[in-house]
Length: 375
Image (cartoon, rainbow, N blue to C red; front, side):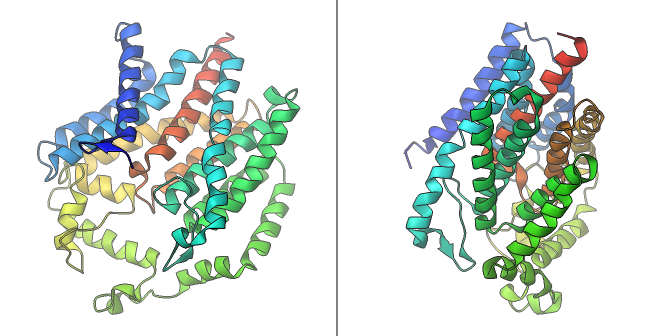
């Protein structure tokens, strides 16, 4: 809403995070942290691909955004030096959710601004309901972790606050009508129930049954069983549901992918080329709605491997850490959910969600590194 020369406060915040990362490395005399090596291959390949992308300026801008994700992940390794520091990181995430959650009441009071052809969908202070939904998934996970953790057993007031925020956030996630967010919340509860407390499986079954009794939720679920005729889509854009539409554009992208399988067509080039390879031609093109397909198309097999180089070691480490404390399985389930969300959304475009998610994961790993060293 407030921009000067096309630059707004969000861009200033992005720049600030890059400066913080530079300051941290300058303080350590540019000693590359071991965890940086998970990010560097992906960032280098993205940087190389900007040389042949059809959108070099957009590619560079998006690359800088990805570097801020790396910054949010790495900064806790330099500042989390005790259990108290880690607890403060969690409190930052919980307390900062007040503003977007309070904004929801404005949407309920004036629903016209949050209503479109898909009906009423909450998006709070965010630009799209999906981004708000995935942000809330992180908030729910942090609150659930704090409630179950022994670290907060003497902070009764904070744990009560976490219960309130978690339950209200779950209601808001339903209000976003983001089906993939519903699925990953179910996954979080399912994994926790399987590994820690079996009674949560009964809670999940009961909550799912009650939710399906709500007409708007029922409609969103049933929509997946309609509009799956791909032949009809060629003549009628509205003929496919959103998931079937995604599968059509993925198949189209993968056909062209084999022209440049190793290095791809350049970072942020998917939208440009989709205007030609998608079954419905468009001057504006369309997003991939799948990070794995997007990266395969834009930075090729080499870049895709670099992305897995980032995800798999962290996933493996979080799986190992679940043995140290029961609540650690929540963090593993959240990261697994993050990997699954990439299957159906343009997740790398969701800046705020990525900031909070990677900050939480970085703080958790930084704290457990101290625990392993006995510091």
